[in-house]
Image (tube, rainbow, N blue to C red):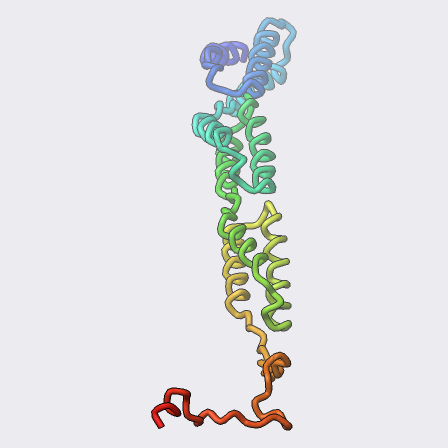
Length: 239
């Protein structure tokens, strides 16, 4: 039995352990040491010899290859190069959380290929879920234009609608988590509220002219009417 044990040991003692995870290599090395101890033990029973060989066999079968982490390294570098100021903070926080977990797997020498592949998948998913901050220039302009309107010129009903939409627009403008879709929608809504403003009807009041007190009344009683048909001095002479 010891001859079989030694032959099995010699056959498997030079496995390239650099290809496998430290945890699984540790069990393999323990099994090798146990085989040597049993082989040298002159009082070793047949059961101990068979168990030593079985332990080594199980340790060899349990060797776990080190994971290929090249893809994981690339996606980690990609995530770290992202300008996080361009994105909504809630989605950035989620990315940073996933990135932290992924880095731990990258640094774990005992991580399996399955764990590494899952980490790559999770980090790529977190990158894809990043939401860019909205461009609010159009919204800012629409708000300024709405505020500049002289609401006294328009009906109360349409002004109330505009006021409500304007308040909503200002809240969205302040919201860092507002999406571009939300911003574009409120810009359109605010512009429509402005377009639907109705001017108040103005009543035209006609005020009669007051008589000029300084102007002499041509038909004032007690004064003879001037005869504009009387002959001039020149006409009298000719006569």
